[in-house]
Length: 280
Image 1 (spheres, helix red, strand yellow):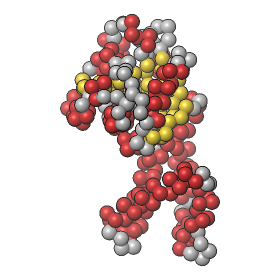
Image 2 (cartoon, rainbow, N blue to C red; image 1 turned 135 degrees about the vertical axis):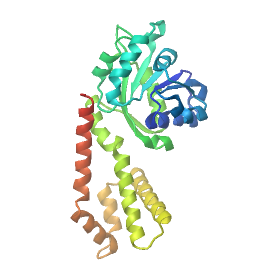
Image 3 (cartoon, rainbow, N blue to C red; image 1 turned 45 degrees about the vertical axis):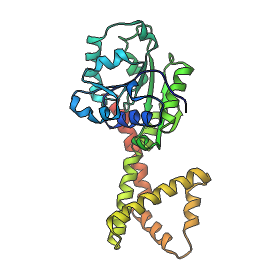
Image 4 (tube, rainbow, N blue to C red; image 1 turned 60 degrees about the horizontal axis):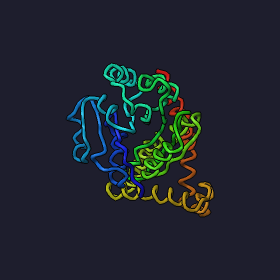
């Protein structure tokens, strides 16, 4: 697998940042020593130090000393974070080549350009992404888009990093909030389904640990079947539903419970919330 020579920075060292950073180290794209992470409480970055990364409680150090900077703070923290960075920023010849990569839900390229314009007055290179935490096990689903200053080489580097941690695809910016509703929030929806399936098994007498393992493996197998066969989920469902059998009776209960409509509504509301977060 290709490797990167650039130093990779993370402003914000939470779960999403760690999923990306640890994944990049695990698959060998970067060495731990190439990673610099900041957070307000240095004691909360212990897992990064265990990984071999360098940690600091000064965001400005990450901005000044890395080449590709992932912005991983919460959307409502962006304003105060940028104000601090602007106050402490020391202009450098490297600023023109610095690449800012945002994982902030709902925060547009235009907003990011305006917030970080103190770094490079002639225009900063910015990429907006929406990853999900499944990349910590190499099965993430991430979309990304860049502003007009981003080069093909920049996009290739970001694609290399994100695609190594699952699936990565470039999309138009107007699609990102919708993909947030499907893939960014989707793992939480699926975890709820896994838990409910396991609870159903426990209710019928299956031991908890066994029921949870079977439920998770069932969803993993079903997902792989969709991806590998290319068949529509409805076709695959029909292949399982024997006439008068157990499965069709269970599917009928799902329909009575409005599972399909509930999931569609969840994606819709999550998409709307993503857009709202970017306006705050």
